[in-house]
Length: 509
Ligand code: XMP
Image (cartoon, rainbow, N blue to C red; front, side, top):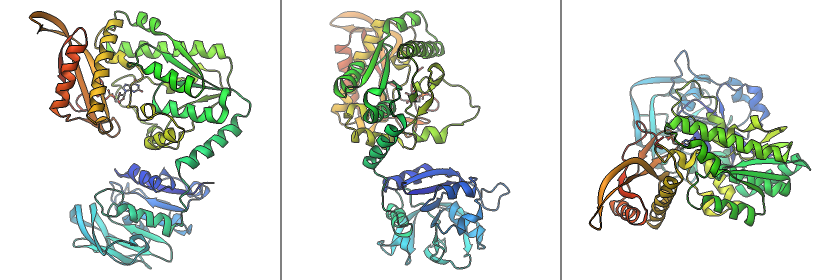
């Protein structure tokens, strides 16, 4: 049983970041809602509990609380920001609402506390609050203060309850990671058993035991999550796993070939590459509306997958590349449909199977990547940028034809090559070329041309919900542009997309 820390979510903006930091310190943790019943918390047998920040005030009628029984479990608690105020409020101290808040980097003085072990006496911390603790609960002492905040940190060593008004999880707090490390290792006594190597060993054993001599099926999209999930399951059960990859003819240059090389030739996976390019192009012929294109691609993908799955017959397990952010973010409500998303997650309905295996369900994206490397997958698979399920189908604006796809593939390939050459690949969230349906007049070698315009898109983002356009140096853009117009047929103009999301979206369709 691995050591677990519970991060209790009060809705603050850095909650996932806290969980990330704890995992980076080699301690497994889960983010759970603050309303989780005490029994459930106890059943997880945590070695430590962290309260996150949150937008509420402890005074509000709708203030988020935890079951006070949590303080009597004998498990060390660290309250951060709102979490610190809640501890004071629930244990009999006082919280006051200041006229003006304290925001940004502030100098703090640290006193003796296990949380501040190894820190200089003074340092900069990141504050973001209006309320603060004005009177300590019984048994507590002050362990840090700032000019405006007399209780910047407090503790009750007997009960092993610690609280900080500032945010140790953000990079602006000097030595913040060390504070979290002190809490985990010195207060909670963690041993640090959360490493990707251990994770792989544990998961492989678990999957092997579960699957036994039964059959497993996985839909591979070429994306990181499904690739890592499939490889992990393959390591556990070998030939009992069959993977199906639907080649819709809308992949980028060399991608399908790469999938074949890495997974079929390299790993010896039982991989079915269903060549359906002709079918997709036929169904998409003459279609220009973005939503219709998305729907057709999604539907045909399922048709092809279903046909292949039928050939295999009944399977016992279906593998899905669900990752932790999908789990925490699922259950979203009734927001407007901006685009009908297509990914391989919607397949369960069409396969005859007993149970889903989601080996990456507990992992953040960069942990998934670390597992990929641990499994020996090549960098181009593990570090692959996000790619939409409908592929280039939504990057050829308007009607899709084989020729247009070919043009886009070449332009996109040049763009990727130049970005890599400039050493920018790791710094941009997503970058790709779009073949617009605009044609314009140009001149090449004294001849008039009337050809297509390629748009280059590059964005910086954390979660794809919002994005800023990337400020790629002009020289790099210039190099991409001249190579595209010189090397790619039917293109005589290149433009750079300088819109953020919102109001634009990342993809053009
Ligand atoms: P938008 O264009 O909505 O894209 O700003 C946000 C992110 O999602 C990707 N994307 C998709 N991913 N299936 C996917 O799996 C889809 O249908 C799909 N459409 C967009 C897009 O590339 C960006 O990273």
